[in-house]
Length: 141
Picture 1 (cartoon, helix red, strand yellow):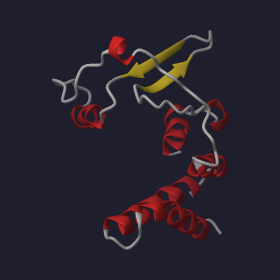
Picture 2 (cartoon, rainbow, N blue to C red):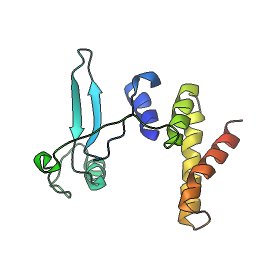
Picture 3 (tube, one colour):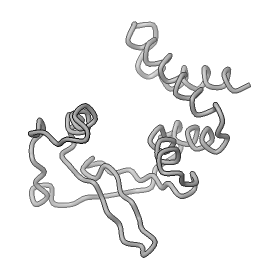
């Protein structure tokens, strides 16, 4: 959901132009569809060290921390539409970015508060979702 908000804000597109797909292999990290319907994708090993390293060393590229991507070994990439019931925060993020203004920031703040509470053993991992929603709704009254 936060990546939807990020795409809308960074690229100046309408939220309806951002399509989310579930990709279980976590190989394709982003894709852009051009006016001629061609798609350019950014792919890599499913390892967060690569994107964190690039964020720290931007605009330079450094020796990799993650293993090289072997597409032949992976064999197939699959994609499916998200189940908004399973990924319930995704619909909350779409709502926040469509409302615009401070609402996306309030959603992010609710996430920070919920994760902090989890890290301090005040809530269970499975409570993060409910805590985010409750905090977000209190911000957005």
